[in-house]
Image 1 (cartoon, one colour):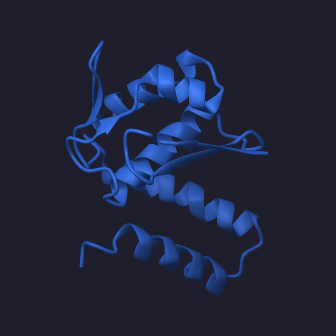
Image 2: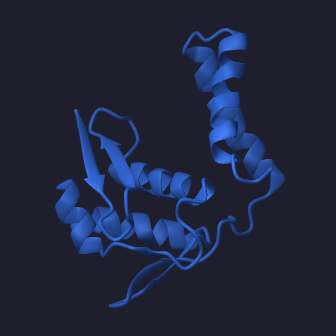
Amino acid sequence: MHIVWCMCAIDNMYITIDEGDRRPMYQQVVDEIKALIAAGELSEGSSLPPVRQVAADLGVNLNTIAFAYRQLQKEGLVKVRHGAGAVVKSRLLSQTTEEQLRSQLGTVLTHLALAGLTLSEAKALIDGELNRLFKDRE
């Protein structure tokens, strides 16, 4: 089952979480917001909707969304101000090392291999995602 939540404070942008996904709900929210930031759909200074609104729209616990926002703050992507909400701080992760990026990429590539994709299928999938993320950076 998919639950879709419209980010009301940000026109025409959606976060989708999947109850069947193995990732915790907070991680799905973090990953969706990161993807919006990486694609440039959320720019520096953009306000994220209030935690209470997101939790109510998604039908999840308030603490789940608060934790997701704190994770994004910990990674340097948003600034959370109590009572004033969360704002996109940067499009770049703070203090990410090449080793961490290689580890995360290795995990993703392992998942592709375990899913049974051929090399050409994996490359096509990766190329599609790279083109989507970097469409405005060439």
